[in-house]
Each structure stands twice: as C-alpha cells, then as structure tokens.
Length: 385
Image (cartoon, rainbow, N blue to C red):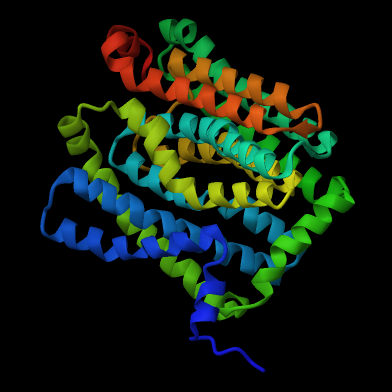
C-alpha cells in the first residue's frame, strides 16, 4: 500500500535524518528580511540572517548533489568540487565588495580551521562513541594531507616574504599573491584530475558514495528542473541574506565589542558550512569514516586551493587589493591545525579521544582569537593587512 506523503509517519520519516531538521531554520529567512526592512537591532539582524543562510546552504548542497547524480561521475564530481563551498564563497564576495578585507581573509583561515578541527573533531568523537575504533584507507588520506600541506605552504610563503619584498617594491606583494594564487589553482586542477581520473576508488569509498547518493534518486530533487530551480533560488537568497549579514557586521562589532578577526575566523565559517558539517558527522555515525574525513579535509582543500585564489582575482574586479598575506596568529593556527590533523589521520584509524583532542585545539584557538584585540592589539595592527 502506498504511503500518504502528508501523513504523520511520512513527515516523521522526512525528518529522521538530523540534517533534515536544519530546514526548519528556513523560517528565519523572512524574519531576517522583515528585520532589515524595519531597520532592527544589528545583533538580531546578524543572528537571523545567519540562521537563514544555514538551511539555504544545505538546500544548495542537496541540489548540487542531485545534479551531480544526473550528470554522472565526471561532471558530477566537478560540480561538487566547484559548488561545495558556494555559500561561503558568496558571503566572502559580498564582504569583499563591502571592503571588509580582514573579515574575508579571516574567513579563509576560519574555514580551514573549522573543517580540520571542529568538523573532523565532531565526526571522530561522534563516530568513536557510537562505533568504537574506526578504520579507513590511509593512502587516500595521505594524498589529501600532502595536498593540504602544499596549500598551507602557498599561504605561508607570501606572509613570510612580504615584509622584505614590500620594503623594496610595495606592488610586488600583490604580484606575489597573484602568482601564488595561480599556482594554488593549478594544484587544485591537478588534484581534481587525479581524484576523478587518476586514482581508482576503493570498494569501501565506492560503496559509501553509492549509498549516500542513493536518496537523491528519490524525492522532488530527482527532477532536474526542480533541482535547478532550488539551486537558483538558494543562490539568490543566500546572496541577499549575505548582503544583510555583511551590513550588520560592523554595527555588531561595535555593539558587542568583537573583532573582525574573531567574526571572520569563528562565526562566518560556521554559518556557511553548518549543513556540510552535519553531513560529515552523519557519515561518521554510520561508520563511513573515509567519506566523513573526505568531506572535512576536502572542504579545507577547496577553500585553500580554489576559494582563496579566486577571491584574489575577484578583488581586482572590485578595485580591491586582497593579498595572500595573513597575520602571524592565523598562520600559527593553520600550521597547528594541519600538523595535529596529520598526526591523527595518517595511521588509518580513529577513536573518540582523538576527536575530543581536535575539538580541544579548536576551543583553544577560538578563545585566543576572542581575546586577541585585548592582549595583542599592537601586534595585530602590525601584521594584519
């Protein structure tokens, strides 16, 4: 007997997955718009627009996955790789247009930190508590961590060389950033080619991807036109709410005493990647650790090798100068995150304690960035560009 799609049982089945509950936050989309039209409190405006972006980012990801299934493995993989961080890219482009360069660069740092420490930490903790020790193919993770190390080198080098170069030629720092951005994008293209064509998938990864993709063959998004419509509407609404969010940043900073660095490193990345984060935790709970780690580390790679270089060139279109020169605190945090993640992931197994350790490192860094303006305002002004 066919189940009534409007029955209580069908409704409960629709929200059986934890990530599906994020859609309830869609109520904040019209609330944020109303608060904006009424010129409401900037703190309330920031919170409501942020909560509205979270489910829209989730719908954007679901629509992308559905289109990927329709397009096949090669085109689908390219779609996922290109649009995986679309929500955060939109937010940073809007911030870039508004001239909030510190927020943009801090969000790049925060996205990498959030994926490597917060998302992976929650995944290992949740998966370990439910399934005990979990195992995964360390060869694939080794390739990803090597690429991640190269990406961090690409962000560290301009920072280390900028002072000496700027003393001779100020414009050369921008040219250095453009050159490094081109190199990072080349590395991203090569890694995509290797992933899509050069390396056969293990049976476990193929099975996990097949199972995780199966739900997208059913439901409204299985229709190509509906998936495209959802994708377009999500992009438009995310762009609109991003305008509201970015417009509330400076009033929020003044009202709450926060810094642009803290907002960019901690708050903005969580907003743009919340839905994707929950998917990684779900995969860990289902004992699909290779897929869970792939989501966390792969998203970090995409930020470092694709989003950051693209923002350098987009800044030129806006008449802005966005260099890949970060402050010493961001660089120290990035190096620490990559180092601890590599030490935990390269042995091919994980447990809940390792997840807790990653979360502890993230909390330490979050506290440090929160108090940074009070403890090191002079150094922050010196090293921030």
